[in-house]
Picture 1 (cartoon, rainbow, N blue to C red):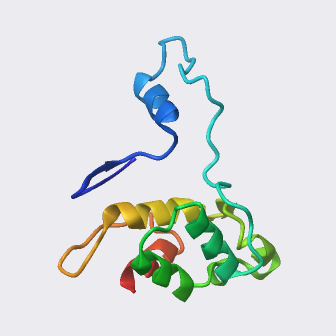
Picture 2: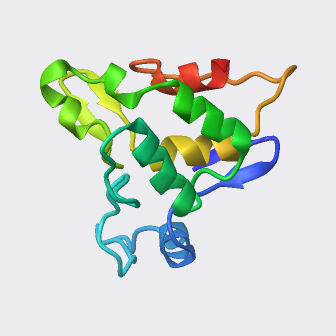
Length: 138
């Protein structure tokens, strides 16, 4: 869940959001009839950064021209270790040791929801590689 001046953004389907609000039963079991949600995998993998972005647009994760321009300006593979670059254009989170990147669909939803513009700011705690922060600098 993310908050912005425009309200609250929750990821997942409406059914998943409702199940998440219901919380645990008290016996350690979660009420959700859904399996744990992997962060990403919402769109098919691309061959390069442009393919990935085209897929995110087609799936309506990228909706604004501003977010599209930011995604096209920064190649996701530049944030991967060389031996793992073949995973860069998959819509999946990636972790290697202390290096972590969330799925591209998650980053695009954050950017669309925050709707930052000149005069506004945000604090990115635990910014990791700085990948998301770089998007907001464009």
